[in-house]
Length: 259
Length: 226
Image 1 (cartoon, helix red, strand yellow):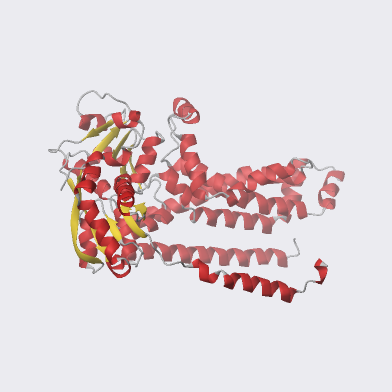
Image 2 (image 1 turned 180 degrees about the vertical axis):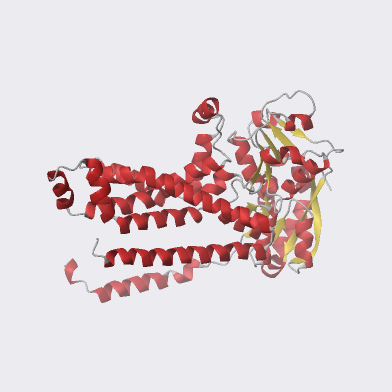
């Protein structure tokens, strides 16, 4: 009997099923997508969870280096909000006309350093130059703000020439953290908030560079034109939540300082 | 920027060339052995060889990162014995590329050997020639198109490799920042002109190479060889 089923019938079935599912493939989107710098991912995810508890509305968070996300936004990526790890990219997007309103600073971050073999003798700067350190990880210096900050710090400490050979660049703080967690580097410049959920052992090996050595890194966020067009109320509501007492308290828990 | 550009392209060419040479050296005997091997376990080995074809490159890269980590058993041994660290090094990339492009070298050659009529090597043995002579003087010349195919595929595949290098390389200029990574890097940094330059050169080069080898392999078939 199977042999008698004609190919026309098969084709009909195929098209029938493919078209009948068409109407189900695009339900009205209810959840907003928020683009978050890799270094702030855990913190903003926590804010999103709290936001969901309070308002019942979910948000999908995606992460990447701030530069990459900003590029995607200029190419009409469907992100309603963007939480950067710096001020540069949000204001860059505002200038190019991809922002709604003015970007606001949501937190002050700070450069942290993870050192595998603690405690170290002597000054940190000397340790970096020593033979004990073979590989130093930092994030991409063109697209990740924490990478840029780390590189700048090295230049200001006048050790860049001496340690250039040891540098390894992660695509974003997320990849730098991968290097940390897989123990493939000796030192890594990362963001403490992104490792708050990691093992105690990892956390104990993180130093914060002092204010004199590395200034705070103001981090800004914005509502994109996409967000304004498609989810005006929700985007604004999430934006406000991040700046509210609750949102700021969550950021503090992760180690951020309030703006 | 120009010297960066040249360094990156030179690095890419080096990686692809060295990987291809390593693959020829280990691939030829391996493929030959596989083609002659008659066993029910052959399909297991063949499937393992073909694994990099279906495994996502980032998965392969990530597990190589863990395997070569200075804290792993293998990593510690390599560092103790040879002072060699494979993560974030050119050598590590070569090894990763060899694994990743392995099926592209093995499969065409294996099939090439398998397609040779058995009377070729049987005649050679009957005439008293050794395995070595048979292999180099009788079998090899007859699989030239397959060998060429394998070489071109492996080379091109390594030039285009991204996932493994992204995981294992560390994006170090002059050491592990090959063209595919550099393009991605430039795009992330909003430097579209520079990205376009790399892409264009790669495109021209790949196309010319494929064109040349298509022409060359056609020459062989015309001469009456397989």
